[in-house]
Image (cartoon, rainbow, N blue to C red):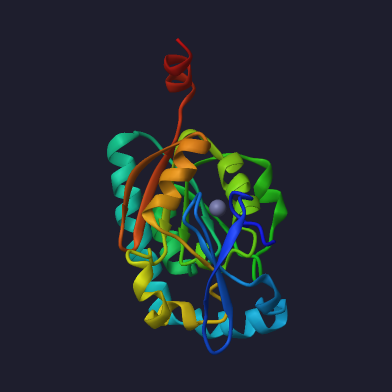
Length: 220
Ligand SMILES: [Zn+2]
C-alpha cells in the first residue's frame, strides 16, 4: 500500500505513462509520482539550473510585485517575507527593499540557509515550487510554522482542473514535477490546518493563516 505524501491517507494507483506511475489520493485530491521514480538531488539540480534563467526571473518578479501591493493594501507598514524555493535576482530584491519591505530567500540548492526557519514572516511566496515537493506534507507543516498568525501564503503552481486530461498534460512530463494539486487539495489543507483559502484558480493560490483573534472567535 502506498500512502499519500500530503495527508497520509491510502492512495490509489492512477496512471502509468511511458516513464512513471502516478497515484491519486481520494482524501486530499493530490496526484503524485511513484516515489521510486524521484530523481536524485544532482539530477534535480541539473534540471533546476536550466529553469533558473532570466525569463524565469521576470515571471518571478511579476508574481511577487502584485502580491506585495495586495498585502500592503490590507496591512500597513513594512512587511517581512520569505521567498521560498526560487531566488530572485539582486536588482529586483533591491526594488522591494527600496519600497521598505524585507524579503528573505530560501532555495534548497543555492541558498539553503536553515537559519531562516528560526523566525516567522508576514508572507511567504512559493513560485513554481510545490510541484517539486517530494514530501508535501512535511513541507506544508514547515510553511505553516514559518507564517505569522494572519500571514499570507501565495503559491504559483499549475492546478489540475480535469483528471481525465492528466495523461496528456505536458506539466506532468517534467521528471522533477512530482506532486500535482487540485483546488480540492487546498480546500482540504485549509480545513485541516489553520488557513483560510482565499483564492485558487489556474496558476495562483492565495491563503491566509488564521490569526489569533479568529481562533478565539471560533472557540467562543
Ligand atoms: Zn492525500
